[in-house]
Image (cartoon, rainbow, N blue to C red; front, side, top):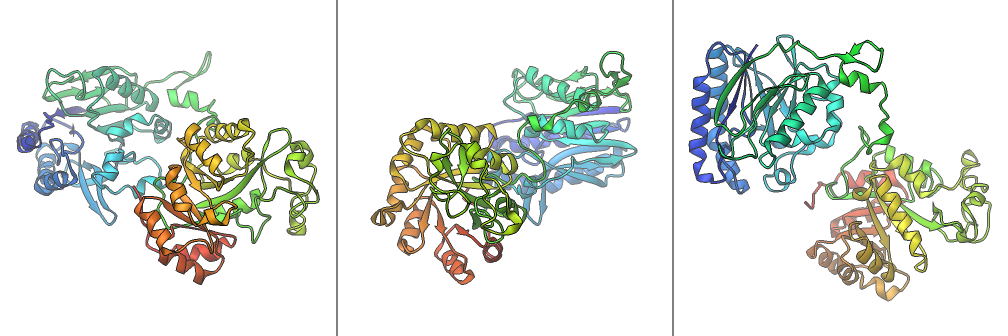
Length: 537
């Protein structure tokens, strides 16, 4: 198979867009009918740097249709498969898309970039909703060859390589930019990809300048990791012959028969050692849309409050958030229970901090809810994180004593241990604790609570601003429309504690409340889900 990679010039001067686009069309004209496969870079319909969404949209309007028509004509003329990247238009908006054209000039499939940069989402406003859903790696099969795909930023997410390898790919197409990486770094990444997927990597990028040692590096890499060609920063095109069915096999450990590298490491994989992953992962707090429903103490109308069954029921039904309270035991363990005392929810008596965790484990925290939950133990904060980290946003009500600084540090350590920093926010009405969180742990989002002082509850917006809180939590009966409007005007997200009444919940949403805490998750979630979703990023 004869492969051609094209590397156009690229400028940060937007006024040179026509020149760059002309090069792309002329490069396609130079392709001969002896080629089997042609690959071009990312964003061929935005051929020079767009400094704004308006400039990007202008380029797409001018070039997109002309370019795709030209690619189709070239595929037919050369009788070659061609892979290019440009914008596509779908119901959800505009997407960064790699197109696969067959030898007849027909689109055989599309790949949507899976890891969009923050700028693509917030500045260029590309559709990214699909990237927050579970999906298998995209595979397009043409003429018995299995093609996989990465686009630019995708190359950095090595955790995706193992799943791609499982697809038995022959070729990975990389329509890319990666304009800030050195040639050496780009070689390492491409070799690593080829070796781990046992597939050829065909990568096309843009030249930042022929004297530059960053960007560019359009290349073809064999499954062994051998670089067959690397264009560096040279503008133009390069042709190389490959056998896409030529694979690399090695002994799968001493004395074992040969296998692909990914097959060898799959035998010893331990997925629970890595960061949370999989189909249950939801959008993190910064990018999860509003309005939301927060299951207060879990779905506690059907299971004991602040229990794993209550949290699990809410999460299984799709709760955006769960709320729970944290206290500390006599031996410094973190447990979830609402009251400072045990009497209401267990067969014990006295205060939480008077017991060790082992002593609390001897008590029954389920039978007072119903006989079906008899024998249930109190959950630790780590128990909750083990089951639900990154499966929902956690509204954590801190009830830690102010005179025990090491206790708060333990909560933060556990959040970081389970990679949950983006999925939690810490709620308290204690001003001293809010000040400490702002000073010592500014990276963990804070939510200002009303506090015990009734007068302070009416000053909650000012307090939230003083302590740099991303959110605040109104207490029912202690806020009005003016306070909601003031919070919104200052970029502060508003919770309300609480509502189990659908009519009341509607009124809160009409006022502009972002998140409603509820004890009756399903009833209130149905109200919230009817509302149009909005995002703060």
